[in-house]
Each structure stands twice: as C-alpha cells, then as structure tokens.
Length: 174
Image (cartoon, rainbow, N blue to C red):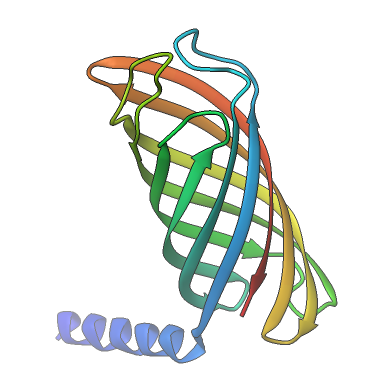
C-alpha cells in the first residue's frame, strides 16, 4: 500500500511539473579569446561560433540540450562542434530586464588540422558557465547578453591541452 501511495504521489508531482513546463529555445552568437594556457596551442586564437539550445522552462529554471559550430579565426579547416546539456536560472522572469546564470555541460569535437602544430581530432569535456542579462521584447521573446568562461580541456592522441577562454555571447530566446 505504501508503494502505491508513493507511486501516485510521484505521478502527481511529475504531472504538476510537466504541466507548468513550456518550450523555450535560444539562438546565440559567441566570440571568445584565449587567456593563455597550454604551450601546445596558439594562445592568441580568437574563436567565434553559433549555437542553438532547446528545452523546457519550469518557473525560473530552464533545462535543455543543444549544439553549435565554432571556428578559430587563425586556424584553417578547424571546426569545433559542441554538444551539450544546458541549465539556466532566471532571477526575475517577469521584469523587462532579467539577470541569469547558466551552464552548458557536454563534449566538444574538433575536426580540423592546425598546420603549425600538426594536431587534429581534439575532443574533450566541455563546461561553460555564464552570467548575463535578458532584455524582454515580448513575454516569449528576448535578447540575451552573457559573459562566458570556457576552461577548455582538450585531449589529442593522449596529449592533454588546457586553454581557458573568456567570451561574450549575444542571442535571442523564443
């Protein structure tokens, strides 16, 4: 009997949460520069990219997943492809200006060759925390500006590289 009550309670809880959830999507442009790091990578490399994230908003909390494409401006044929889960907390959801914190956690694949260093196929864990502001245009449409920190930790053929980056992203949510 206790198991049945626990299952019914869990179902009611899940149904309540899912009924409050609504779809939310993001499209972002970001740019970052290296803060220095591994001697094996070009520490002055400038990185630009686009990404899209989709998920559900439950009250002030967003949960979703996304993907993007990024490229180094000084390396030929190099594309980073991040695949990630996203978490975001909005502090003042109903105000015209809202502040938020967010994090993207996932894996990044680099398909490309750096002619100077001879490395290719770098893959690694990706974690990108952000703080920013959302400027509401409509209840379900806004412009987001965020400051990102990317502690890039990459692995290429057993060699570890560390190249932290600081960046800014500008985008829209819908």
